[in-house]
Image 1: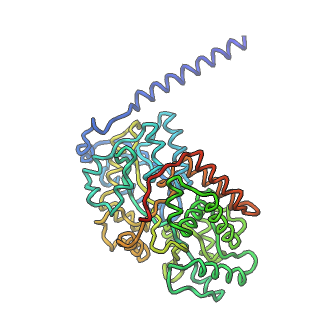
Image 2: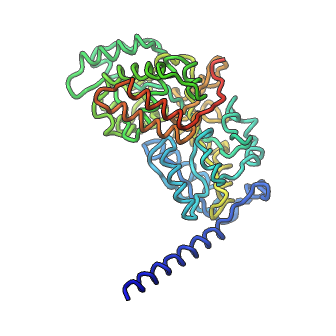
Image 3: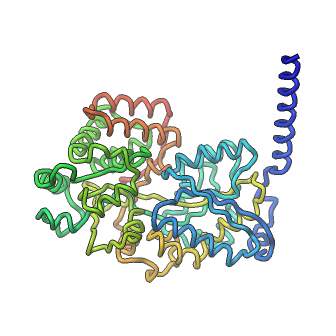
Length: 454
């Protein structure tokens, strides 16, 4: 009797799941941009709808920035409900997994944050992204975009699936001016410090700081900050080495050399670095526990939220060896073609590119606008400096593989795990971990076509 009841219950459960899946599939049938009148959709400001927005901005400053976008969207599309959903993690890794789960449950988000390049390929392979070529055309994004940006936002099939909202520089070291003054460590009169200058600063702090205080911190509880340090060291070692690596050409000896430099750097890092997220490490830099932090320029708004003033309380160095290079991290939004309200997703994607949103978002996020018509008055002094860098014809750009652009998602996330393991290991063995990194690249069959150096 019990077996019959269990069998009946299992049959009922299967029927419920089947019906639910069929209902979700019927409700969320995929839509093609070719079949949609996109200009009419974007201009329909009085229609009702719902847009679920998934992003990973949770720290001080950046949270305010995304909320400003939500508010601007509500002002323009007043009858569309905009729901902000934060997925902590950063660097895109957690988002890919979350979106996959939502899609399988028949609940694909109308729009979600992503980085252009290799990171969106898993979404393309699953056929869930809406082609946004007409959004780019309607918003004149090709004409407005900063030089080179359109190429980075063009997918492997030649189409555009992402609308960029902001740009940050990745090869940055933040430092506490007051800590330098406290311990009598001289601050170089130039931001583009050399490796010798960097090591001298680290060593002087190590000699002068008491127990419990350290020259550097990573804040790599999530893994990706440790990987970002790896890519910066690689670029700072030799740009050609970086280009070869993201093109799938790697040499065990050269990877070992990069890790040997990394191992030396770890001598100056707080030993419990992996117990903190990046924003917690930034807070400790402000508190004076650590003198410096290797972090992307998204630490700026967090500094601002803690009443820190650039040039008075903190400064920045360009990561050693990367003078003249801008590490590119582009944030944007993509649109699911099988969500409950594809049209609302389209409206969101277009809206993030508008001048109004770019002005408010770039001000709060302290990011460089992807669009040339955003006025310089929008920027704080440090962001304006970065904007002038990226638009200088003498500056070269390198795409981040930690942040999804330059390497396949599987390779990038595996590298993050492996490099964090290296950073947290007791001996930081370059030979041992170099072999693991090379194995990851081999298993991922990386084949890029990047030309950075020439």
